[in-house]
Image (cartoon, rainbow, N blue to C red; front, side, top):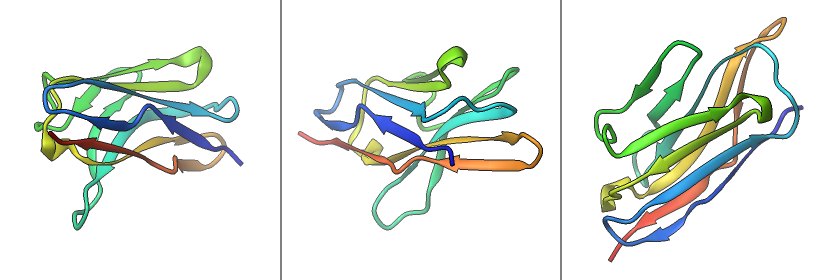
Length: 117
């Protein structure tokens, strides 16, 4: 069973920065995409950013402020978040999906990001 473990969440003032990390508990083959999603209280989970071998996709609300990157050798994905706003407050979840004999879709346990003055 593969586990994704997020770290780097916390509390920050508006305009501040945080860097989230997500590491897989073991090597994963057949990854199609890794990415970040978030869920604010009372709202549905939404895509923040995803990364495949050929494309990067960002939610409009974070374009120009967030950057996703990946260390393939370590099966780790990062989310650099700059110019944070109160509306970025949410639990951030890491995701990895792909095919390795069968479709897989792994989720982390989530890490809280709070942006408040």
